[in-house]
Image (tube, rainbow, N blue to C red; front, side, top):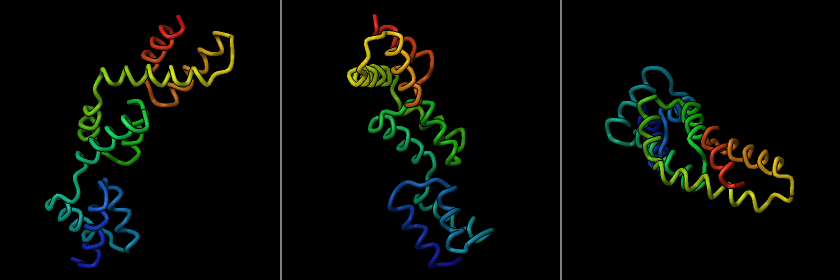
Length: 150
């Protein structure tokens, strides 16, 4: 096993949580591919440098709490990063249902203060579009926006 590549990969994973795909790409940049790459990834997993479930949990929780992303956007981003379905479910379990609804209400209230229109239909359209772009589910968005505008 290439010790230099192993050290670089371990440091790469120690710096912040990574996915298997991230590490494979990093190793490819270091011209480490195939069986050697898989051996390094196996070593990283066995020595707890690389844990995709831990990555998914931290990613989902932090994107929700800090960036106020909805489940759809988080799920899409995790899939794009090559996270397994099991890890994706584990990550999504980090989002508390009550906190989720409170956050959706907060972002809608905050966005409504920025809208300088008096037409209720246009306000509703802008609020719905904003919440959907943040990755919140259609049914929840329409429900919360409807209650907010009453």
